[in-house]
Length: 339
Image (cartoon, rainbow, N blue to C red; front, side, top):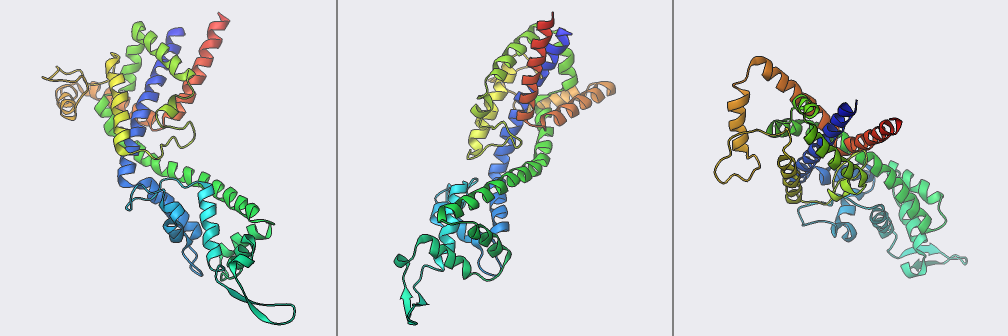
C-alpha cells in the first residue's frame, strides 16, 4: 500500500513538472502568435464597439492610458486592469460633452456653459445622454442611473469589467486546451514520457521513488512554487507579461531537472561528442528510429498507450496536478497516522 501510494505521488509530481514544461511551451507559442493580446482586444471590442455611436474599443486602445501598456507599437497589452479600463472609458464618454454647450437660464436666456462650470459627473451624464440609442448606451445608462457620484459610476464599471474578465479567462482557457493537447504530443515523444513504463519503474525502484517523494513534498508544501514559475494556481493556469524567451528559458530549466534526476524519462542513447546531457531534437529523432522503430509490435503498442496517457494527463495543466499532489500527501499522512 505504501509503495503504491508513493508511486502515485511520484508520478503525480512528474505530471506537475512536465505540465509546467507544456505550459511554458504553450505560452511561448501563444506569445509569438500574439494569441492572448488579440483575444483580449477582440473580447473588449465585442462589448465596446457601438455601431450607432463609436467604436469605443478602438478608442480605448488608442487612449494614452492603454497605449502606455504596450511593449511596442505593434503589440497590444495582454492585460488591462479594471481601474485603467474604467478611467479610460469614463474619459472617452466625457469627451463629447467637454465642448461648450448652450443651456437656458431661469430668466429664459441662452448662455454657453463651459467645462469648468460643470462637475465631472455632470459632464459624464451629458456625454452619455448625447449618445444615440444602443445596447452600449443602455448598459452605461443603467450604471449611471444607479450612481450619485462619478466614483460610484466607476465602481459599477470596474465590477462589470472584472466579471467580464473572469469570462474572458474561461473562454481563453477553453480555447487554449486544443493548443495544449496538440503541443503535448511532440513534447511527450521528445521526452519519451511513457506513463506505463514510468509507473512500473517507480514501483520497482525504491531509491528513485524515495527521492521523488521527498522532492514532491517540498514542492507541495511551498504555495509559491507555481507563482515562482509564473503560473497562477487557478482554472486558467496561464502566464502573463512574459516573453517567449523567458518561457523557453524556464522550459530548459525544468527539462534539465528531469534529465539530471536519473528518472525513467528520456531517450537513453549513446552520448554524442560535446553532449550537454539534454536531448537535442536530432538525438531524439535518432533514438526514435533506433529504439522505437526496431521494437516489437507489442512494445510499440504499449509505448503508444503510455504516451497517450501522458498526453491526456499533462493537458490538464500544472495547477490541476499541484492540487492533486497536495491531496495525496494528506492521504499519506492519514495512512501513516493510522499505523
